[in-house]
Image (cartoon, rainbow, N blue to C red; front, top):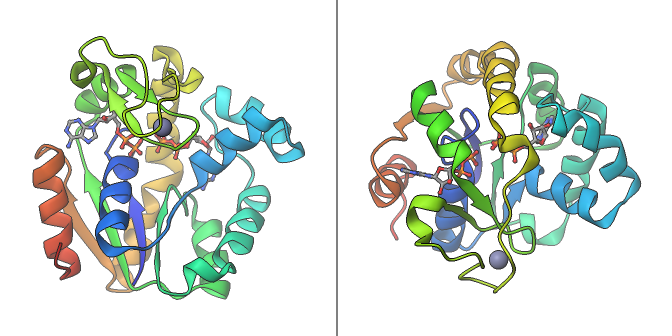
Length: 209
Ligand code: ADP
Ligand code: ADP
Ligand code: ZN
């Protein structure tokens, strides 16, 4: 199954994509993770992306479309995948149609006020992509999965968060209409707790854990 996870920053896309991918044994393609790794490694793409990401803006469509196109052409994507964080603009969605066939779009729905709390407490592992919230860490500062030191993303600071929510409403929210017209859109409440949301997505996908 080729699946898109749509939803504002902090909705739980990364958290849920990782769980669903484990359950279905398919790869999680997170454009945010790819870009953060490129920045950490200091690649040309990373250098190009940094100023946009730090300002809470989207990186240009042509940069991200090529990355996704290349990634989806890899062998491990042949049995399905979850796109987490792509597409984010209508031109990205249109480009995706030229090289992928999407079966289902899951939109995680969460109120803006909840998103601000989630983002300001988010801690991430740059090595394996795992995501945590300070409220679950009990003071722990390393990744349960791989032992790496956890960090707060630069773009999770308060000023940038509000800008990212604005960018989401202006540039990404119109995608719900785009996929609704194609009959692919499924809305799932993203404020049910991590396990409850997982169950709701699995049910929507008609998948068994
Ligand atoms: P996104 O990828 O959509 O930006 P994340 O999966 O990174 O969202 O989640 C954002 C923050 O919210 C993280 O700190 C995560 O641990 C927390 N979180 C995710 N899902 C839930 C949930 N259902 N209830 C409460 N907190 C959650
Ligand atoms: P979020 O928590 O907002 O879901 P992501 O990790 O998906 O965060 O993305 C972080 C940043 O990376 C975005 O604010 C944006 O600058 C950049 N980015 C990620 N995916 C895309 C994309 N599909 N198009 C443009 N920019 C992207
Ligand atoms: Zn890790």
